[in-house]
Image 1 (tube, rainbow, N blue to C red):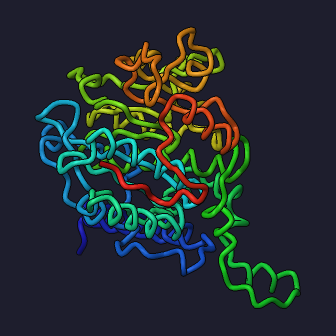
Image 2: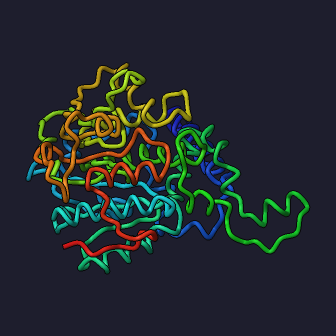
Image 3: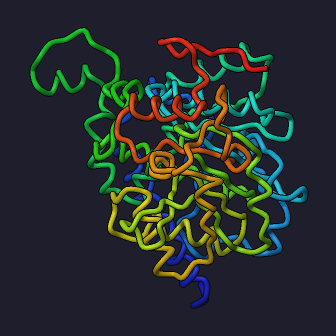
Length: 383
């Protein structure tokens, strides 16, 4: 005869199995073109847990996690010699010219090395072959590229399903869409290729999708128990920024957006997060607390402001944004000019505060930080 404890245990197990079945069913509802799926790990067993009780303890944090995803990353020296980081770019192939320029700026200033290997989280199939070609053309300097779209979509479906409604039309194959509309076509390429190959401007659905992907890359990195350094692709490196991130607590370092549009004036396109329990909980909250589908910068500023998160805004003359670059009294000119007034100050420049590709390129050219010499953006060899 079963005891009361046994009955309760069986009921609990049945409930858990029912919840698991429901969860898997919801993930399976994503209509994803099979040609986009190229990352060989089990997405259900390796995603960050949504349960707060599963956050790592301080004792667990001392040892880096070993999961298929974490083992696929490249780890670099962090803000101090006893820390490690993952430096992440999140990009499609349509933004490749700027990603390539950022990588060339790192190579030209001798930042790409065995202790600094950037990781490109690829949103589509087009960017990883370009990254591989870049490495081959630049003395085999190491840059890792990992397919990220499948992992990202499964987390979006679980953690903020309303965002999936926005991007859903781009996830169906073109032939399936045409079939649904009773139109015959031989087109087989995924509609997602429009997201992959386009340069998307501020305010578009595709742009929101891409910039919000940074939050998931950031969480994935922190869940591997390593620091996360996340930068947009429209940046250019002049010096090593790691000495500026050396505080030994939960402090988050970010570029100053010099804007009154956000509570903290924090720019989420250049951030360094320490691997701590508090920061893992924070990025979890940023992703999962409604309203959904805000742009990443609004979400980061709002939640950090509401939670009084300790943070440091990096000095605007050392980490200038596009607004600062436009309005510097003494123009920042770094290469090929006699006016080097601010050369010793600049660490990383960010060509934001612009909406178009040509505007960003012109800004970087104006301060001597555009390294591509031809119209096609083919990789130039760095010293």
